[in-house]
Image (cartoon, rainbow, N blue to C red; front, side):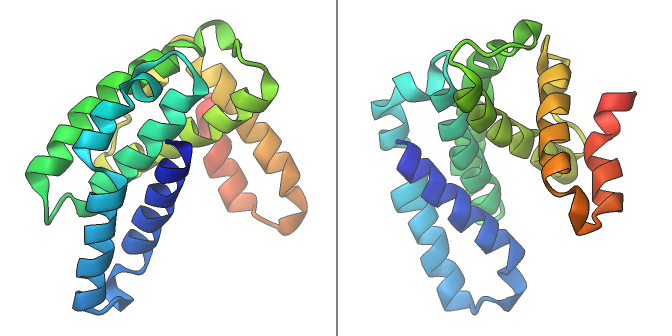
Length: 173
């Protein structure tokens, strides 16, 4: 399921970023891929354990589905809304594991889950102006700030001062 989610994530981001540059017939093909191969509801229900569990797989899998749903929202609002409801509800279980600021699967899976959780939080905020309460989950801000500091420290020499300030702003409220 992780592989499908990763491909859906990539297709959705590319579809969004390059939308105006993609010819209409290619948009239709990408949208069909996202729907048929990525966010297929039968597949979602078949692998419900990955999507609703208390593991990093929950956050990673639901991130791909959520981004796929957002990418097709204008053309497929009913399907996108169904996926929105499923993914945001299921992600609560995965995000619950941040309480207290720790991650029970260890630091590697913590980083993997945090990267995807941060993507969801920032995407929701950028798209809707809210993260729909994800940042109010106990431990969420602490974990994301630690992860953000790691990411920022990795890229400090690249001169991304504006991005650095923006990325860390939730940590200094």
